Image (cartoon, rainbow, N blue to C red; front, side, top):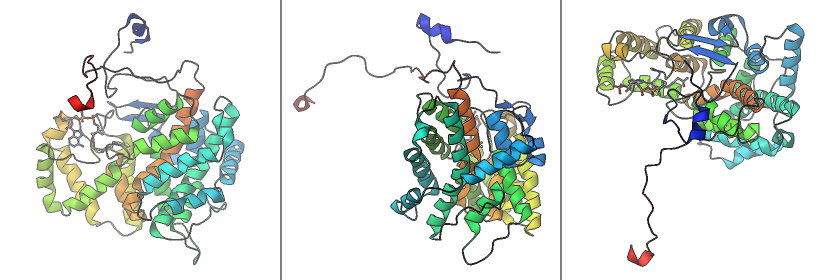
Length: 400
Ligand code: ACO
């Protein structure tokens, strides 16, 4: 049931809903979630079908433009994105300003925001053509920027994008290749990363997307808005959860310690990372796909007996049979499994949230684009419930 309460503000009445438990901030035609039933659709298409049958760029086209592309549209889109993958030489020099041991998410916030200093046409957001080219630039350049953040972090040479590769292969090439040897992508690992990208591409009005929309509602340029989304994603309650989930598994260390750890969660000493979701009160449909992908990747790499995976399975079994988790409707979310897959692919833990940011860029851009084109959308301006001091007179320093 939806109650449109905007008219109440004219009567001086407003509602208090600090974490937006029951407040819609917009209308949207992009992503549908039914948290009780565990459903997720992009533009009406179930996530399971997209993860199984589609590829990431096709999903990007769908999210951005509303329909799946035909063959000619798909080829044209791929060619446009491929043409924009390089970054300006001056932008590459930004990296030297960061410490080598900086968290790659810190680098992402800075460098993606800095794109606004290069593309002045992006500043006029009311022109749909400008919005479209900004969307293409972001989709194309964010993987390059992310791979450069990694290479800088480990002190290796930046690898320029290669047009012969698919979007996901190219990202893996820029991450893992070195000038010394030819890089041959493993199709099973490429497909796994492609799935991770598809599953994370959009998730309606989560914290980072809402941040992008709020920043964009003031008319700010898309690069600055996406940088704000990256900042919001960084936290362990959101995009940082896969990094936190893997660290948690490493900390537990052995299957024999699972029961003790779960007891600690029930005693509220800490949370079970990769469990729970604001909207899903049933299995996260992305988690089921990711769980299957886990099996495929570990089999391909002969890691079926991987200790952390065994531990994760034991933790999952223990939690799903425990009344604490059952009563609170806490199920594994996508991040419970994605960390294991990313680690097996060879992606270091501090890059996990960056991978999420690369995948979510299309969701942020599509939501931003939808909002800017929505005549109903004004500048976002939450109200507050003031609980501070009442009026009082200034006290001079000598009398305080
Ligand atoms: N472990 C243990 N208990 C939990 C967990 C958890 N992961 N998540 C929620 N709970 C408990 C809470 O302590 C609370 O218990 P109470 O009723 O006894 O006080 C109850 O479940 C309800 O939890 P809330 O905090 O109200 O749920 P909220 O919707 O605010 O939080 C969130 C959702 C942030 C995702 C939370 O479940 C969490 O922190 N999970 C771990 C981090 C994580 O995996 N985040 C990824 C989200 S998915 C994504 O970004 C792709």
